[in-house]
Image (cartoon, rainbow, N blue to C red):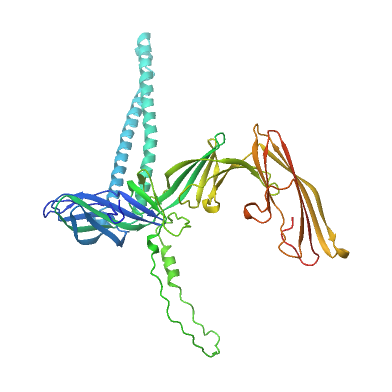
Length: 524
């Protein structure tokens, strides 16, 4: 739908000639922002309509943002907004919930009757289950037939009662959910609004309505699954959406935007600024007046006095302009504040795999996948990770951190890492012992227990002198593959492909000399 066309989809009433009628139309499109939403409604009207009335709208939308437009030969005249007290009529959603609750209670009563009926049968059978000996004792055949009949009838009655009880438990859960939703709905806006629009429709056409509401939002999320045999990563873009605007969104087209409609600002023009000197004036004790609370502080305090603790999801934006994501399928989102995940699309990427370890910090090796950065805007968000179909965990992902996408897919238990301390010395050095010296030497022993060759990246954070008084001498065997890895001073990298059952040994040593007076931070 074009930006300058209808933004909304609405409840409308349709009548021909001078008549004027009520009709309810569902929300069809929602643009969701961080903390707010633009609701769009639209409805067809027949030729000759001269007025429509929109009833049952939640009263919490911003009337300053209301936009009504006519299309396909429909002209819009006067627009009147009226407040309707809750006692004058319940909101359509509240009416629907109450009717559902009555229907569920009727189902429970029906099952109660079935249980009572089955219990009456079993009680009667228990009374006649042991016939008097003087009546049936002489007829063994009749006694056997009666006993089998009682047993069969009792079994069916008990089974019927059991099935009814099972159904009651499920229906009772549905009833509790409906009553909870009704309570949540009633805790929001209890009044409603109606909108009357004067129209001139020479032919059948469309009237569109849009408005802004708060208490809604979204935040990005991701799901990544690696196939280690194929060396591919399936990356799915998701969005966590929720709303508590007072009305459910059913079958709506959802657009997610990083923009903020309330963020409009006029440019500030500079003003002339003069400097004036005032002679110092001696002040008296207690002469300073108490500071009044700032208007923004008062507004923040008032904002916290909400009827509940719902907080709409927010996102971390890093771009200069807004970006929009269109949800491919229509969405159902109840107005109870629950978070719903919607998929925005999947991509499969060829990835290079390596096992990465920093022995001085942790002996745990991690499987890393690296692949080309996908096109488009990738906002920071939570990501769920899967390896060969198994869930690994979730973490916070910063997609803009590197030129290529890099993801960790859990610990690699088949790469064994041992750290052996070879030397540790602290003593005097220099002329007549005027300086301190610290020597540290470690060996990292890495074993590949995989049945196949793997690429291994070993990282080491070596000390870096940031003062001319501190001297650092490094001893590294074998020579590192990269110094200042990824532009990080002092971070050293070794890369190697390890064959199955191969052992790799790396020796690192540091001699640090520094003045005896004073202190040095960051010593190993």
